[in-house]
View 1 (cartoon, helix red, strand yellow):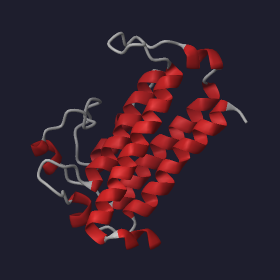
View 2 (cartoon, one colour):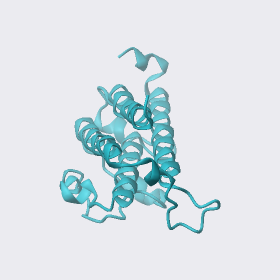
View 3 (cartoon, one colour):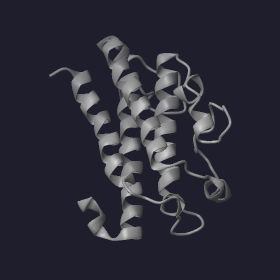
View 4 (cartoon, helix red, strand yellow):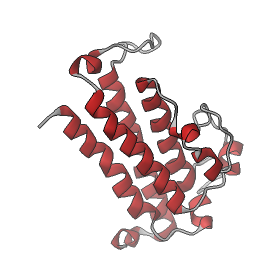
Amino acid sequence: MEWYELMADGYNRIPEYLEKVLKGLTQEELDWQPRPDCNSIGWLVWHLTRQQDAQVSALLGEEQLWIKEKWHSRFNRPADPKDMGFGDSPEQVKAFQSPDSQTLLEYNRAVVHRTQQSFFNISKEDLDRELNEPWFQPTPTMGVRLVSILDDSVKHAGQAAYLRGLIQGKGWQKY
């Protein structure tokens, strides 16, 4: 098995899992926060997709799908490449209005698909290329960053699933 097949499989699990997490949720459930300083399911899914879109776009030297395919308009948000939730205050998270579950999933699928397609154009040498990020020690490589993006996405998907469990109890996974 090649490295890109493993990575493609890992990334593909995100939308598969999110489909289960988001299935049948109401707008109120998507935007529910267990406390005023906590994230909602909708915000978490948006953020995990935004961070993947932004970071993979940067690695590839391409425009973010958020802007290129005008996903920002479907989320009623500005066409700001930095609008991805990093450092959002509790007030900004509370003000976030999720689109419907289908829009969240469609954006995630589009981003994951682009990420997976990029693997075919990345060489083993590219994976070892150090990124210009001296604030991290050791300096990350492209390969390390791709794993980090996947790791962050999986963590946020798990957080969204946990919130769904708080709303509906553990029986929601039967859906």
